Amino acid sequence: MNLTIFGVGYVGLVTGVCLAELGNDVVCVDTDARKIATLQRGDVPIHEPGLKELMAGNCHAGRLAFSTDLAKGVAHGEVLFIAVGTPSTDDGGTDMAQVFGVARAIAAHMDAFKVIVNKSTVPVGSGEAVHEAIAEVLAQRLWHAAPAPGFAVVSNPEFLKEGSAIDDFMRPDRIIVGVGDSPEERRAGALMRELYRPFSHGHERLMCMDRRSAEFTKYAANAMLAVRISFMNEMANLADRLGVDIEPVRVGMGADPRIGDSFLYPGIGYGGSCFPKDVAALRHMGLGMGLPLRVLQAAAQVNDGQRRLLVDKLAQRLGNDFAGRRFALWGLAFKPNTDDMREAPSRVLIRELLARGAALQVFDPVAMLEARRCLAEDMRDHPEWLDRIHYAESPLGAAHGADALLIATEWQEFCSPNFEALRMALKRPLVVDGRNLYEPRAMRTLGFDYLAVGRNTVD
Ligand code: NAD
Image 1 (tube, rainbow, N blue to C red):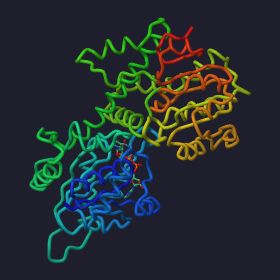
Image 2 (image 1 turned 30 degrees about the vertical axis):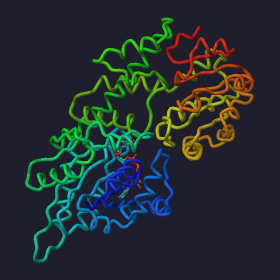
Image 3 (image 1 turned 180 degrees about the horizontal axis):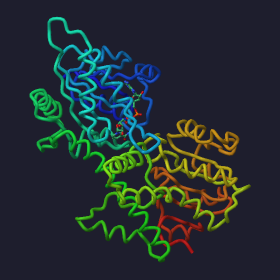
Image 4 (image 1 turned 45 degrees about the horizontal axis):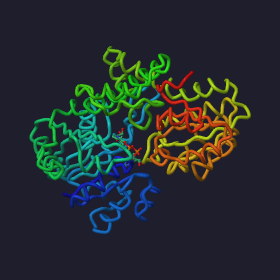
């Protein structure tokens, strides 16, 4: 099929590359000319395992191209994907400007039947709104002899996870397609079934539902995951106070098939471009309907507190004033295998530590450049604080001479460091681990003062 993807971010690029890999002819369009130039050179502007190689293969095979030309994109695809950003507004709502920008561009240029697929995460009812926006622009255009072309708007929310996006896209748990039953929409539904047929591998993954349900499914799923994380973080905080180790508790809970063992790991809170934004958007939708979503409010509140947990743990050992202290920080990205710093818990941690006078020696395997950009943004009101951040070249380099090591991201390369060398590098053998990477007893035997999340290591 001829496909066009509008918006070449994490979702759009992975979608375009993976659909090309299946043999489709894909054009990816973005308004960011620098990003398109980077992609046209064969470079990938984000870190996502396996993406660069898969992209190169498909560009080479002539199935994948990048462009800033919206009109060309509209002309090319029989299916047009909208995969642009839907950031939060100040009140927790959803800024739909990018989505409507693409919708209007499509309407301005289309001259044949098009299926418009919304992959961006959008509030319930956005499908109708996009449909209306397109119909409005089409009605303003002059159609000499022929009538305006037909179109259908489909909801197809994306469930990939950064860090394993290719695998998630190629081996989906489910593909949600929300579509109505007008003749155009039935035609669109059939096209979507055909497009996604190769992903089913003999087991139907595609779930068809109405558009509003599809839009809602995405939010409800992310909100459920966020609640699970916050629930587990509260359990871990209580475990710390009760003198209980959360680890066997987690395993015991997860053994119940009604609970399951994924997403039960305590830590320093969720981040990234989706959970905080989607929880806020769902709460905003609830308020709009006169229904405050109290569970989600609590989940968000717990998460805000959890991002400061490592600072509190450090203060237990060193007191509240960190002036003159130097801390190592391992991990900046909001999770491993990505360079995405959006809403990363490390950003809250870094700001808090700098505000209390500390100097930092930070290291992340891939997010250093992105971190520099984001931290400069975060510290716009105190640019002089940035001088107290040193970007180290290795984990051990970051640890050198530090009063404590803090861990914010569970990168694999942090899991089994040379503990002896680490202890020697640190000025004080204090490790405050926000991702529970190590065994508390083993760490104590190795001579570390080790604080983790819910691991009964707080005095
Ligand atoms: P992103 O911010 O990384 O990328 C969005 C891209 O859209 C940018 O490159 C921007 O330049 C481009 N853009 C903006 N306006 C445009 C226009 N008019 N025409 C063409 N391009 C335009 O966003 P993302 O992280 O890929 O997320 C996209 C959507 O998918 C969001 O709604 C998000 O909530 C959702 N989502 C994201 C993830 C994830 O892990 N990142 C997972 C599932 C769903």
